[in-house]
Length: 118
Image (cartoon, rainbow, N blue to C red; front, side, top):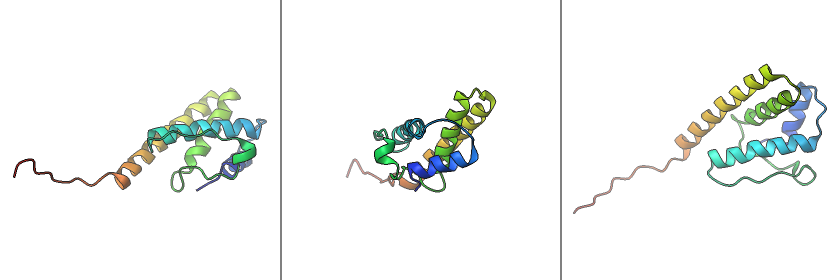
């Protein structure tokens, strides 16, 4: 699973931006909380760059691109690149739907046949 630092480094190598790592960590925290709530049904935690940069994020392959898409969308939004923002956010939403479906298929409890009457 990718770490906070790895995601930020990958995005920075592909997208020129002047935002601080603290800001980017906060944006990834927002995505991570959404992932925690919508997929795993738990509460997420906000990341502090100074403490959590080597923390592994919740989703690994094949869904680790979710974090990059969300981070790129936030950068584009703040730079006024609204067409790119909409495109990346749409991809993020699609990948979230895919991740939810995968999680349900993989971890759904097995159905049991109950007999209510002897």
